[in-house]
Length: 226
Image 1 (cartoon, helix red, strand yellow):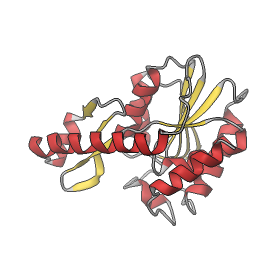
Image 2: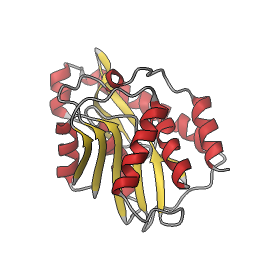
Image 3: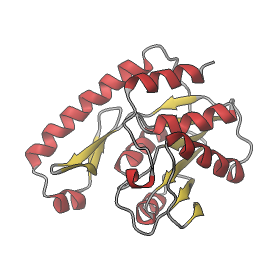
Image 4: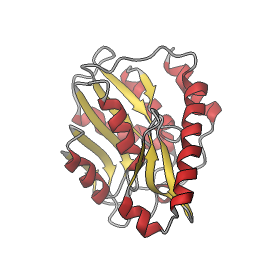
C-alpha cells in the first residue's frame, strides 16, 4: 500500500525539515511504535539527517543500511543499479540500455562502489552493537528516491533479517518508482510526503541539498545513542 500526504510538489528547506514533515506523516499513519518493537534504518549519507529527526522524536533505535548506487556513465546521479552492503550487485538492464553505459564501465563501477560500501561500514559501524531486526517493524528512510535502485537493495538486505514488517518512508519520490517497489511485494507499506507529477531529481525538491559528509553521519549516530 502506498500512502501519500500530498500529490503536489513540496520544496523542503533542508533534510531536517524533510525529516520533521516525514515524522508527522509517520505519526499519523503508523501506530504502536516503540524502542522494543521498531527500528529506523537510514540510507547514508543523505538519509541520515532525515531519519535522525524521526528516530529521536519517537525514541527509536537508529541503524544504517549501506547500499551504493551505480550511477550512469554520463550522469552519476541517474541510478542504473546498486551494490548491497553484503556485496551483491543489481543492475536494471532497461535503465542500463537507456543510459548507454558500457559493460566495462559498469564492471569497474560495481567494484568501486563495493569498496566504498565496505569503507562506510567500517567508519560508521565500527563502535556500534548490531541491532536485531527479527520480528520488528523496520522503517527504511532516505532523503528521497528517483529510480529506487538503492532502496530496493536496502529492502533486500533488511529482509534477510526476517523483520515482522517493512515500511519504506520518504519525503519525495515519483509515483512510478513507488509503484514498482509496491508491486515487488517486498514491503508492507510505503509512506511518501510528496509525489510530484514532474520528477527530475531528488535535489530539485530541496532549497538546500548540500552533501552530507561522514562526520555528520557519525555525529548523528552518536547522538542517537544518548
